[in-house]
Image 1 (cartoon, rainbow, N blue to C red):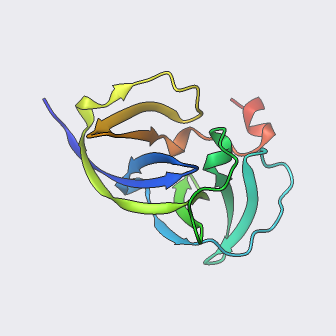
Image 2 (cartoon, rainbow, N blue to C red; image 1 turned 135 degrees about the vertical axis):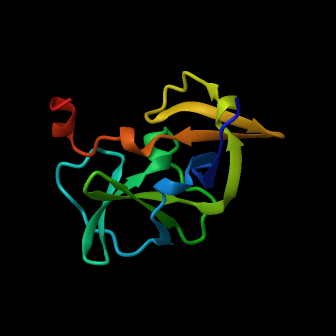
Length: 143
C-alpha cells in the first residue's frame, strides 16, 4: 500500500535534501549571526527571529561539505524541535515534491539525520530527519 506525502526540497553544500513539508515553519533570508557558546561545531551561531533565539545549523558542514554552496544569499529553513526553533542554513529552496514514502530507500549514509533517500530521474534526494539532531555537547550526555 502506497503512502504519498509532501516534502520540501532544497539544496545545501551541493546536495539535494527533502524534509516533510509539515516540519517546515518558514524559509527566511539569513540575517546577522551571533556567536553562541556550547553549540556543536557545525552550528554557525544564532540569530533572532520574531523574538526567539534560533540556533543556526550549517547543514553543509554537518555533512562534511564546509565549502560554500551555490547560494548568492543563503536562506534559513525554520523548524521547531520540541520548544526550540532551529534554522538550517540552505543554499536554495527548490520545490514541494510528492513522494511515495513506501518507495524510499534505506541507506547507511554515515551522515547525521540521513537514513533514507529517494531517486527520481537522475536526482537523489536525501531525507533529513530534523528531529534527530542534538545541539550542544551536553545533549549527548543526556541521551
